[in-house]
Image 1: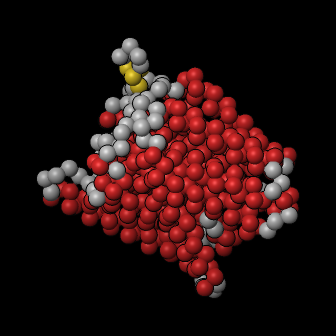
Image 2 (image 1 turned 120 degrees about the horizontal axis):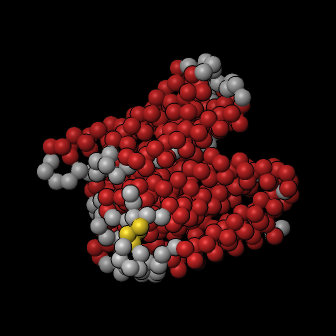
Image 3 (image 1 turned 90 degrees about the vertical axis):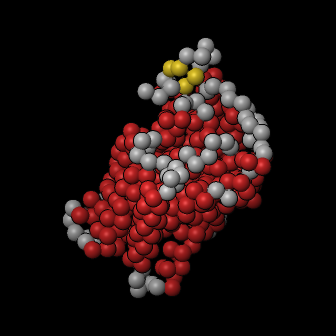
Length: 402
């Protein structure tokens, strides 16, 4: 049973504490993605194009990717709880301000603020959680915390989009801002206070990047994120191409069920069998893409493909943050910030390549993106197996802890 230290020195488990941390990542992913679900409403309401609404998601991710490493390093010495409260205040302010503003420029500025907060929050909260449990439970802590990301995509986004469609896009942003504020209040009262750490040469971003084990995790992150997000960005086109029964709603439901099953199931194995979990998720993703390519439109098979894809996607964030965290003893915040930046840049690269494939090969269409995803999955599997064989021959610790 996982534990968190209390002031008396005894250790007691608290699902509430880690559930509260999970709610932070829940609203974090929603803050990034909500414009995607209400693009027509925002476009009409603000008198802007769909591409300008899409830019609100892109600029958020860009700010997050650029600011993660320098700001995490700059705030390393701050109390973790105080820093988290400041970030939640930034999330709340950015969403509420978007709800109240009619200026596109102001809204873009608010989205940049939200992206900056996200760039610090994602790596910081993972390291914060590991400070509350013994080393053998770090993976489980990260998995539970990052479950909010999966729940946000599978449950939160449909719920928020429903609010936006039925009550207006401003109501959606306002509701999200107030939800963040409520989480901030709960965090003030219930999250433990944890001191920060000093930044030194041994725990700087440069030192992290000199660690060959971390570089391998970053390579796996890039390949896996590209594999998933390249096709996820155009999931609607995939559904149309294979003539999926039930349409995009059914596809997302099945995908979400697979994600939820795997994210909670992985919590049981992430600490003891991290390498095996990573390899199995990569193989599952590759099988899903193969089914899309070979049995497109076949009743039942495409449903299984979406379920398997969701299973492979579920622990994506948590397993690589756990992997990079396992490679360092100090400055886990800095190490995970590097991984978080690579993650966000990978999303941008994946969507860019996928868009180029659609533009330059219209005859191939979304099928070319599925092939790209399959190739990335296979490449990641090869890297993971090479790492496994090398670590077995070497006397040093494994590159990715098993």
